[in-house]
Image (cartoon, rainbow, N blue to C red):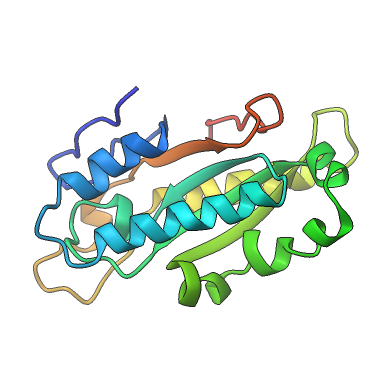
Length: 185
């Protein structure tokens, strides 16, 4: 399902928007034909996803940041939270698990190579004793990614005037292994 158009404040409507990688490209690259940075950021994000898939991880990604914000023609990076089911984490090799803090949840550590600001959350089923931890992190990222940030750009309205924004959700890998993330706050 294609992503909705940007609202009058150049943000996606406030909700979780399931999408494909092609949907993200169509909305956030193709619609910015003069952008000097968007094509490269998208290509690097695709490489980043390939690196994750090569390790055997199946993840649900929440994509955000100025890349998914229509107010900046030339963003610097893309922000991504990688949700991975605990069963999938246990199923991959020990070498792959060692890549979690280096690739899936490296924060700014993946910007130089992939232009991706990456975060990681392990997901657990409702009856698991760590479900509360997962739910706390899910709510944190939903709130954090929904709040437009203030940038030092004179033509950009301050964040409170812009309202809440939407998040793009993309699956990577085996759909049966990608965790379902409740979109509610």
